[in-house]
Image 1 (cartoon, rainbow, N blue to C red):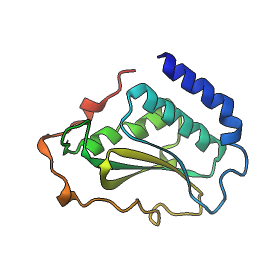
Image 2 (tube, rainbow, N blue to C red):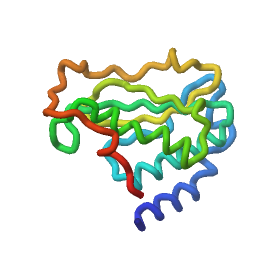
Image 3 (cartoon, rainbow, N blue to C red):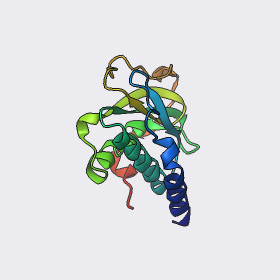
Length: 158
């Protein structure tokens, strides 16, 4: 818990430089953050920072791209692991941070080497349809273990 508090304090101390006016060009998308497998507290801290950044640019959209991985926590993934894990992100931003659902877009980017989430801030002028994820590994190159993932398995109980 103390790690989370230290992280939040550091973010608030440097937030004037992160969220200064003019940090987002009106026509250029900006990658805000990227992370892999984190615990729930650290993930929520990243989501809180993303919500704060979006509040600083009221006409921008938040785009969240998630990628499944060839492995997940050192094991083969189950079908739906990435989707189940990413399913908690938008509801957290909308219900706990008060973001408008229409400002948050979640995109399934396919697969990379490891499970990753990217946060992008997109100016209103750019359509999310034109915004493409990074080149990915095709699904036929991924080996899955038996079973299907459930979003309940990835709930944060914080």
